[in-house]
Length: 444
Image (cartoon, rainbow, N blue to C red; front, side, top):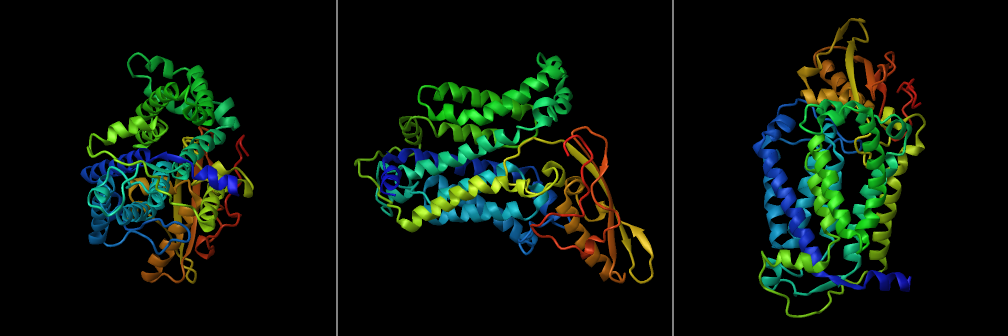
């Protein structure tokens, strides 16, 4: 324990934390403004009549329109405060809470990089990232320092490593490596691009991308840590994420990961960058102790163990997790499947036996309907919503069933849900969902 505490408190550069603070705040600010300017607030959170909740957070759905806009305004204000290092403790917490609140309003908009940003904002709340290059220092609210304990860097590096390594491990499967799926489906769609287009139509290219993508994710963090290979690795990071950003619709994820890779640079580079915004230089070499007490080490240990184990929970469920989606989210399984489906719901009056079919578009946006069509927990949530809505319309304790067909990685469609099961009587939990049909494809 003594050796661990000594290692965690080795002096490290405060400039790196300030750079992390300013960069993360800037990414969130720009992304939020882009989100607003593209009209996505109205499209994603105001127009739909139903929002898919996260299990256990059903009460935390999209609020009224004024509160939706207020949350986005708070995210903008807090991200600016974080960038400037103004009232950092409060602003970083507000940034984490507002960003994560928006993320959990509707599970149909879940993305791995949203989850990653939430984790980075949570980590930022715990760090002394305002002890240099901040308004808090300039106003005298905190004492300026040039060094901080190494644990403040290590926890960030650990989280970056988890994202990469687990994404690589997830790619070690038959479809990705031996069938080049789903890249064999996606890449030919870009065959019209100049110069490289014809290459993207070749099966050989899909196999090269698949194997390189797996190896890259597994080993890139080791090359970023090594001072002799760091900058060569960074060039690879830029090329890799630029190509994936060009070919696939994955939002700002490539930019986020390119920025995170720069955190491994020499601290002098971070210092030179932040001094362009905060010209006042540290006049002392005092180390901010931020000594971790036993409960602090325990908290870090719990966080580390959680990040190591939580992505592996899919192994607790039988069947193929890419088909059932059980344990699939929050596991850094990036771009592993191409799925599409159709879900036709039927409502039956439990007393009269009269039946009718549901027009999903009456309640959902096109994006919501698309995501729901192949995700069982979303289908179950919508079934419960339909039960309550049609009961209000006078149908006696409606029976809700669904005829759902899904295709995965180009294989023939298969039925996802038992069409005889009354979904309105099923409650969601963490146990195996026996009402999900077994996948008949090669992956089962």
